[in-house]
Length: 286
Image 1 (cartoon, helix red, strand yellow):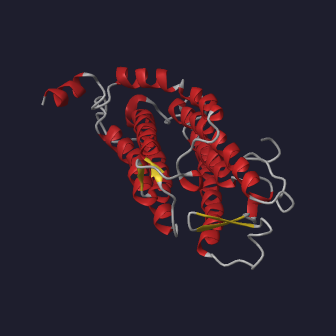
Image 2 (cartoon, helix red, strand yellow):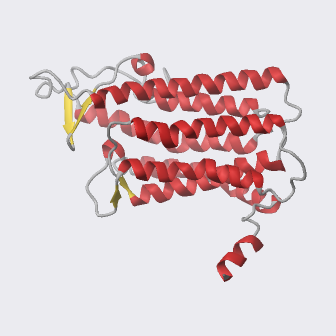
Image 3 (cartoon, rainbow, N blue to C red):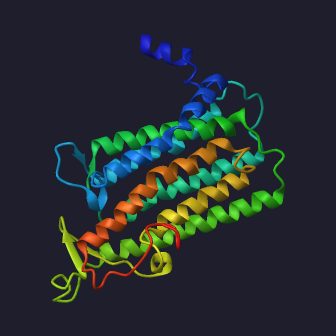
Protein backbone atom coordinates (compact mmCIF):
# COMPACT_ATOMS: atom_id res chain seq x y z
CA UNK A 1 0.00 0.00 0.00
CA UNK A 2 2.87 2.39 0.75
CA UNK A 3 4.25 1.88 -2.76
CA UNK A 4 0.83 2.54 -4.31
CA UNK A 5 0.43 5.70 -2.23
CA UNK A 6 3.92 6.85 -3.16
CA UNK A 7 3.45 6.71 -6.90
CA UNK A 8 0.57 9.22 -7.16
CA UNK A 9 2.39 11.60 -4.82
CA UNK A 10 5.34 11.56 -7.20
CA UNK A 11 3.14 13.00 -9.92
CA UNK A 12 3.57 10.15 -12.39
CA UNK A 13 0.35 8.20 -11.74
CA UNK A 14 -1.60 10.07 -12.90
CA UNK A 15 0.91 12.19 -14.81
CA UNK A 16 0.98 15.81 -13.63
CA UNK A 17 2.30 18.64 -15.78
CA UNK A 18 5.46 18.99 -13.68
CA UNK A 19 6.19 15.27 -13.92
CA UNK A 20 5.47 15.35 -17.67
CA UNK A 21 7.91 18.22 -18.21
CA UNK A 22 10.54 16.39 -16.14
CA UNK A 23 9.98 13.30 -18.28
CA UNK A 24 10.51 15.28 -21.49
CA UNK A 25 13.63 16.91 -20.12
CA UNK A 26 15.36 13.56 -19.64
CA UNK A 27 13.74 11.82 -22.63
CA UNK A 28 15.82 14.14 -24.83
CA UNK A 29 18.94 12.24 -23.79
CA UNK A 30 17.76 8.87 -25.09
CA UNK A 31 19.77 9.23 -28.36
CA UNK A 32 22.88 8.54 -26.26
CA UNK A 33 21.97 4.86 -26.63
CA UNK A 34 22.99 5.02 -30.30
CA UNK A 35 26.77 5.06 -29.63
CA UNK A 36 26.26 2.19 -27.17
CA UNK A 37 24.47 0.12 -29.79
CA UNK A 38 27.16 0.89 -32.35
CA UNK A 39 29.83 -0.08 -29.82
CA UNK A 40 28.11 -3.46 -29.32
CA UNK A 41 27.37 -4.36 -32.95
CA UNK A 42 26.88 -8.07 -32.32
CA UNK A 43 24.60 -7.72 -29.31
CA UNK A 44 20.94 -7.70 -30.23
CA UNK A 45 19.37 -10.84 -28.76
CA UNK A 46 16.12 -10.83 -30.73
CA UNK A 47 14.87 -11.95 -34.12
CA UNK A 48 17.38 -13.28 -36.63
CA UNK A 49 20.28 -12.16 -34.39
CA UNK A 50 18.98 -13.96 -31.30
CA UNK A 51 20.98 -16.71 -29.63
CA UNK A 52 20.36 -19.43 -27.06
CA UNK A 53 19.97 -18.14 -23.50
CA UNK A 54 18.17 -19.13 -20.32
CA UNK A 55 16.76 -15.59 -20.33
CA UNK A 56 14.99 -15.99 -23.69
CA UNK A 57 11.23 -15.75 -23.99
CA UNK A 58 9.14 -16.83 -27.03
CA UNK A 59 9.18 -14.15 -29.70
CA UNK A 60 5.47 -13.65 -30.34
CA UNK A 61 4.14 -13.29 -26.77
CA UNK A 62 7.23 -11.31 -25.79
CA UNK A 63 6.68 -8.87 -28.65
CA UNK A 64 2.93 -8.49 -28.01
CA UNK A 65 3.49 -7.92 -24.29
CA UNK A 66 6.19 -5.33 -24.94
CA UNK A 67 4.38 -3.33 -27.63
CA UNK A 68 0.96 -3.19 -26.00
CA UNK A 69 2.38 -1.00 -23.25
CA UNK A 70 2.63 1.90 -25.69
CA UNK A 71 -1.05 2.39 -26.65
CA UNK A 72 -2.31 1.36 -23.20
CA UNK A 73 -0.04 3.89 -21.49
CA UNK A 74 -1.03 6.58 -23.99
CA UNK A 75 -4.76 6.03 -23.41
CA UNK A 76 -4.36 5.86 -19.64
CA UNK A 77 -2.32 9.08 -19.58
CA UNK A 78 -4.83 10.94 -21.75
CA UNK A 79 -7.90 9.98 -19.75
CA UNK A 80 -6.37 10.51 -16.32
CA UNK A 81 -4.88 13.93 -17.10
CA UNK A 82 -5.40 15.97 -13.89
CA UNK A 83 -5.93 19.23 -15.81
CA UNK A 84 -8.48 18.00 -18.33
CA UNK A 85 -11.89 19.53 -17.62
CA UNK A 86 -13.83 18.91 -20.84
CA UNK A 87 -13.89 16.67 -23.87
CA UNK A 88 -10.68 15.93 -25.73
CA UNK A 89 -10.37 18.14 -28.85
CA UNK A 90 -11.29 16.38 -32.11
CA UNK A 91 -7.79 16.86 -33.52
CA UNK A 92 -6.34 15.13 -30.46
CA UNK A 93 -8.87 12.31 -30.84
CA UNK A 94 -7.69 11.91 -34.43
CA UNK A 95 -4.03 11.86 -33.40
CA UNK A 96 -4.87 9.29 -30.73
CA UNK A 97 -6.63 7.18 -33.36
CA UNK A 98 -3.60 7.27 -35.66
CA UNK A 99 -1.32 6.24 -32.80
CA UNK A 100 -3.54 3.31 -31.86
CA UNK A 101 -3.91 2.34 -35.53
CA UNK A 102 -0.13 1.94 -35.75
CA UNK A 103 0.02 -0.21 -32.62
CA UNK A 104 -2.95 -2.33 -33.67
CA UNK A 105 -0.69 -3.43 -36.52
CA UNK A 106 2.61 -3.42 -34.65
CA UNK A 107 1.53 -5.04 -31.40
CA UNK A 108 -1.14 -7.47 -32.61
CA UNK A 109 -1.59 -8.00 -36.36
CA UNK A 110 2.11 -8.13 -37.20
CA UNK A 111 3.20 -10.82 -34.70
CA UNK A 112 0.01 -12.84 -35.15
CA UNK A 113 0.48 -12.95 -38.93
CA UNK A 114 4.17 -13.81 -38.73
CA UNK A 115 4.74 -17.52 -39.45
CA UNK A 116 7.45 -17.49 -36.79
CA UNK A 117 9.46 -15.10 -34.66
CA UNK A 118 12.86 -15.67 -33.13
CA UNK A 119 13.16 -15.71 -29.33
CA UNK A 120 13.73 -12.47 -27.43
CA UNK A 121 16.06 -12.04 -24.51
CA UNK A 122 14.22 -10.79 -21.42
CA UNK A 123 16.56 -7.78 -21.42
CA UNK A 124 15.09 -6.70 -24.78
CA UNK A 125 11.54 -7.10 -23.48
CA UNK A 126 12.31 -4.94 -20.42
CA UNK A 127 14.01 -2.29 -22.58
CA UNK A 128 11.05 -2.23 -24.95
CA UNK A 129 8.52 -1.96 -22.12
CA UNK A 130 10.46 0.96 -20.60
CA UNK A 131 10.68 2.77 -23.95
CA UNK A 132 6.97 2.31 -24.64
CA UNK A 133 5.84 3.45 -21.18
CA UNK A 134 7.94 6.61 -21.38
CA UNK A 135 6.94 7.37 -24.96
CA UNK A 136 3.25 6.66 -24.35
CA UNK A 137 3.34 8.92 -21.29
CA UNK A 138 5.12 11.74 -23.13
CA UNK A 139 2.76 11.80 -26.11
CA UNK A 140 -0.28 10.95 -23.97
CA UNK A 141 0.44 13.89 -21.67
CA UNK A 142 0.53 16.23 -24.67
CA UNK A 143 -2.68 14.83 -26.16
CA UNK A 144 -4.39 14.81 -22.78
CA UNK A 145 -4.06 18.55 -22.28
CA UNK A 146 -0.45 19.64 -21.84
CA UNK A 147 -0.15 20.44 -25.55
CA UNK A 148 -2.50 21.71 -28.21
CA UNK A 149 -3.13 21.23 -31.92
CA UNK A 150 -6.08 23.64 -31.95
CA UNK A 151 -4.24 26.11 -34.20
CA UNK A 152 -3.05 23.54 -36.74
CA UNK A 153 -4.71 24.20 -40.14
CA UNK A 154 -6.72 21.44 -41.79
CA UNK A 155 -4.36 21.26 -44.77
CA UNK A 156 -1.41 20.51 -42.47
CA UNK A 157 -3.32 17.84 -40.60
CA UNK A 158 -4.31 16.31 -43.96
CA UNK A 159 -0.74 16.28 -45.30
CA UNK A 160 0.66 14.86 -42.08
CA UNK A 161 -2.07 12.22 -41.89
CA UNK A 162 -1.46 11.23 -45.53
CA UNK A 163 2.24 10.80 -44.77
CA UNK A 164 1.35 8.71 -41.73
CA UNK A 165 -0.94 6.40 -43.71
CA UNK A 166 1.57 6.13 -46.56
CA UNK A 167 4.36 5.27 -44.13
CA UNK A 168 2.18 2.72 -42.33
CA UNK A 169 1.25 1.11 -45.65
CA UNK A 170 4.93 1.01 -46.70
CA UNK A 171 5.87 -0.57 -43.40
CA UNK A 172 3.18 -3.23 -43.79
CA UNK A 173 4.04 -3.86 -47.45
CA UNK A 174 7.74 -4.49 -46.83
CA UNK A 175 7.09 -6.58 -43.73
CA UNK A 176 4.80 -8.75 -45.86
CA UNK A 177 7.69 -9.35 -48.27
CA UNK A 178 9.77 -10.62 -45.34
CA UNK A 179 6.80 -12.65 -44.12
CA UNK A 180 6.46 -14.37 -47.50
CA UNK A 181 10.09 -15.46 -47.29
CA UNK A 182 9.37 -17.13 -43.94
CA UNK A 183 6.29 -18.85 -45.34
CA UNK A 184 8.20 -20.27 -48.32
CA UNK A 185 10.81 -22.68 -47.00
CA UNK A 186 11.53 -24.19 -50.43
CA UNK A 187 14.70 -23.41 -52.35
CA UNK A 188 16.84 -24.82 -55.13
CA UNK A 189 19.12 -27.73 -54.39
CA UNK A 190 22.36 -25.77 -54.64
CA UNK A 191 21.08 -22.45 -53.26
CA UNK A 192 22.44 -22.94 -49.75
CA UNK A 193 25.80 -24.18 -51.05
CA UNK A 194 26.08 -21.12 -53.32
CA UNK A 195 25.25 -18.72 -50.49
CA UNK A 196 21.89 -17.61 -51.87
CA UNK A 197 19.96 -19.10 -48.96
CA UNK A 198 20.79 -19.24 -45.26
CA UNK A 199 19.41 -21.79 -42.79
CA UNK A 200 19.43 -20.68 -39.15
CA UNK A 201 17.55 -22.08 -36.14
CA UNK A 202 15.30 -24.06 -38.46
CA UNK A 203 14.29 -20.98 -40.47
CA UNK A 204 15.08 -20.14 -44.08
CA UNK A 205 16.49 -16.70 -44.92
CA UNK A 206 16.66 -15.32 -48.44
CA UNK A 207 17.64 -11.95 -49.87
CA UNK A 208 14.42 -9.87 -49.89
CA UNK A 209 13.38 -8.29 -53.19
CA UNK A 210 10.72 -5.80 -54.23
CA UNK A 211 9.67 -2.28 -53.31
CA UNK A 212 12.29 -0.21 -51.54
CA UNK A 213 14.38 -3.33 -50.94
CA UNK A 214 15.94 -2.34 -54.25
CA UNK A 215 17.78 0.45 -52.42
CA UNK A 216 17.89 -0.45 -48.70
CA UNK A 217 17.97 -3.52 -46.45
CA UNK A 218 15.38 -2.22 -43.97
CA UNK A 219 12.74 -0.27 -45.92
CA UNK A 220 10.16 -1.08 -43.21
CA UNK A 221 12.26 1.05 -40.83
CA UNK A 222 12.46 3.90 -43.35
CA UNK A 223 8.70 3.81 -43.90
CA UNK A 224 8.07 3.90 -40.16
CA UNK A 225 10.17 7.07 -39.88
CA UNK A 226 8.08 8.64 -42.66
CA UNK A 227 4.96 7.56 -40.81
CA UNK A 228 5.90 9.23 -37.52
CA UNK A 229 7.29 12.33 -39.25
CA UNK A 230 3.83 12.74 -40.78
CA UNK A 231 2.36 12.31 -37.30
CA UNK A 232 4.50 15.19 -36.04
CA UNK A 233 3.39 17.39 -38.94
CA UNK A 234 -0.28 16.57 -38.29
CA UNK A 235 0.20 17.65 -34.66
CA UNK A 236 1.59 21.07 -35.55
CA UNK A 237 5.23 20.46 -36.45
CA UNK A 238 8.51 19.56 -34.83
CA UNK A 239 8.47 22.43 -32.31
CA UNK A 240 4.79 22.36 -31.32
CA UNK A 241 4.45 18.59 -31.04
CA UNK A 242 7.68 18.07 -29.10
CA UNK A 243 6.93 14.61 -27.60
CA UNK A 244 6.24 13.16 -31.06
CA UNK A 245 9.39 14.85 -32.37
CA UNK A 246 11.39 13.15 -29.62
CA UNK A 247 9.76 9.87 -30.62
CA UNK A 248 11.06 10.23 -34.19
CA UNK A 249 14.53 11.20 -32.98
CA UNK A 250 14.63 8.36 -30.46
CA UNK A 251 13.41 5.85 -33.04
CA UNK A 252 16.23 6.91 -35.34
CA UNK A 253 18.69 6.60 -32.46
CA UNK A 254 17.78 2.99 -31.73
CA UNK A 255 16.63 1.71 -35.14
CA UNK A 256 19.41 3.10 -37.34
CA UNK A 257 22.14 1.16 -35.49
CA UNK A 258 19.88 -1.89 -35.78
CA UNK A 259 19.56 -1.30 -39.55
CA UNK A 260 23.35 -1.08 -39.86
CA UNK A 261 23.57 -4.36 -37.93
CA UNK A 262 21.01 -5.94 -40.26
CA UNK A 263 23.04 -4.92 -43.31
CA UNK A 264 26.14 -6.42 -41.70
CA UNK A 265 24.20 -9.62 -40.95
CA UNK A 266 23.27 -10.07 -44.61
CA UNK A 267 26.87 -9.35 -45.62
CA UNK A 268 28.20 -11.99 -43.24
CA UNK A 269 25.64 -14.67 -44.07
CA UNK A 270 25.28 -14.50 -47.84
CA UNK A 271 27.70 -15.00 -50.71
CA UNK A 272 29.22 -11.65 -51.65
CA UNK A 273 28.83 -12.49 -55.34
CA UNK A 274 25.02 -12.63 -55.09
CA UNK A 275 24.62 -9.87 -52.51
CA UNK A 276 23.14 -6.65 -54.00
CA UNK A 277 24.60 -3.28 -53.10
CA UNK A 278 22.14 -1.49 -50.82
CA UNK A 279 22.19 1.14 -48.09
CA UNK A 280 21.17 0.14 -44.57
CA UNK A 281 17.97 2.17 -44.14
CA UNK A 282 17.82 5.53 -45.96
CA UNK A 283 18.03 5.36 -49.77
CA UNK A 284 21.18 7.00 -51.08
CA UNK A 285 22.30 8.11 -47.61
CA UNK A 286 23.13 5.37 -45.11
